[in-house]
Length: 479
Image 1 (cartoon, rainbow, N blue to C red):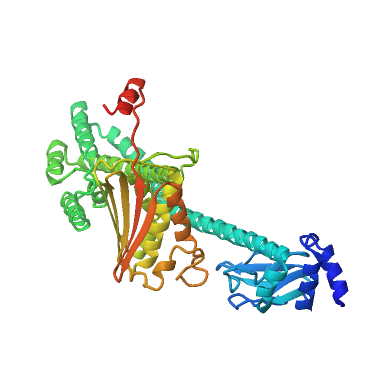
Image 2: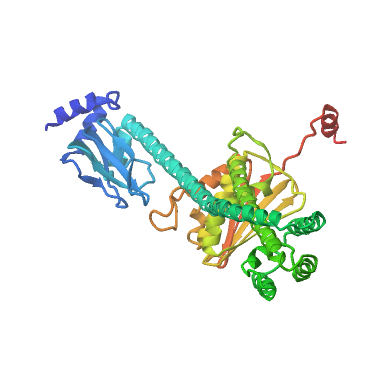
């Protein structure tokens, strides 16, 4: 293809139709015409790029694999300019750049860039715009990916945390249905026992008193086992079903009360009474277990609702820092448990709120605590400390991981920088965190040495303005 034909083709391309012909002639004179078949990788991931590419015809796609398979990030068509661009700091693509279909390219080696900048100012300006557009698309894609990763962590943590109480609720409900038949049978036997109304009232009062005082977690598992064994022995000594021991041991019933019952009730009626009491204990215990599990689910849903601020607009408001930190810990609870980590939180009493966007603030806590969990070894330690310092609230997230190397320290907030293995991180978590902190009028810094890394977030303390007009007037006047 002659130079004249190439120049005419460049003039007909979108984006290049406004470039002076003299500049297009220079590009053709210093460029190289190439054709490539579909599937050709013109810029492999991680390999230094040396050429600028002008797409004469065809379709170039850049794709990245973040651990879940290749994904398209950006595409170029006829008239697009890509590859190595003047003033660009990118030396190697973050993913493979390949041709979707048979394509024609005009390539210009980077050695010609100094002269190109002098001879082709209009085209050079076009490449700068192309560079900015490309960087914007890459960053937007990575930001979206980081948001999806955070959402995935949130969903995974919530699913794991809800699964246990949900399973307990289902299991307890099934057991409660089964125990109701025994409770009905025990009540029928109790009614047929022919006990006097006075004795029946005494028995009911005793059972109600015992059920109203659940022993909860007063006893250790070993002590509880000893308690069941003691009641089981008592039942055997009185020739009664020892299986009642497990149900009776969950209440305040003890050997003294059992002896009292034995003295009150005729011997042949005692098994009927204890069966009725045991059946009541079983249904009572199952109902409490279901209530606790359901309450746990309700608390988790409330924590997620607070964490995401799903019912509030994204605007600054007075935000309680401790609530956000506690909700974040609940969200990451499954990861804390799986790692065997010890996580402690120390919040100063009467810590003032901060004026911030609540959802963004919780995203900061999520990123930092999650990073700390990744940094520590099994059974490692994380401490979260929140204090007021003059007109600021300062939150520190401290872990006892191996620390950040001096070589990496200057780059940890750089976009796309990560020390994690491929697919395990985008390198945007801390960059997003830094942006969110700045958006909320705060500051973030880091200190690290082997065995201790500390991220420090400083936020402006807010003031609660009284609601009444008289109170507001006093607040403005400093009274």
